[in-house]
Image (cartoon, rainbow, N blue to C red; front, side):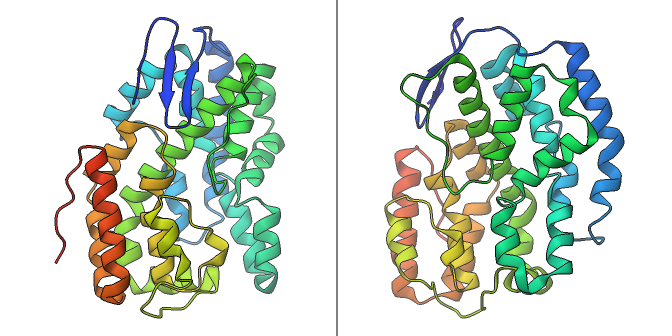
Length: 305
């Protein structure tokens, strides 16, 4: 799935992208940006209550994932550190979205949509801090685009006549979405399937119920066709977990991330949870589709109890 050469050809599921090796900014500009955000970030994340599920965003570092960092360095070359910083700050808008919900819980849907799932708020926070001013225009455009689109329902598309900057925007956005998914699988899966407090919090947040079925049922059809599930349509927690499970088969751009997600054990955990929660007629179709996807990537999913 990945092909890297001196002219830096990156193969994603959405198509191959050829990029030049020129850095989008220099080390001093990156250092200035990082100094600002590291000074400001602790106070921003402190807006969330202790133990809140969104606190995972406060630890958006590449350091805990050395294998993935090495692979991304091979792909991005001189622009790896810009990507590392994009990942560091991509969720910084979450605390303000939570405050918005806390202040006006009945207007959550409108506020949630207005904030583009927190992504646009993350960019606005960086603007208020003056951090974006530390970067030259090209680097700023790539970072802003990738953060703005990292939480979209589907991956961005690359225009047929894409400019060099559009290619970098596309690659950064796809990779940021991939790494974000991987980290969420690692950090949140156990809580999602095993914590009553987390489940109650998520049900309240998205106005869904704990009914033991996939609702709407057409989610299963989308899942078996490896298509993204529309989050706004889910009505039950089981449907939410199917939406979560479906990330790896419908919306990951790098082969190494597909395999890395499987290695976390999250896929088997989610299948095990759904097997216990939903009717067998629903579960069988889900498991068969996931097994077929795994086999197509030379991955073995263990049978769950």
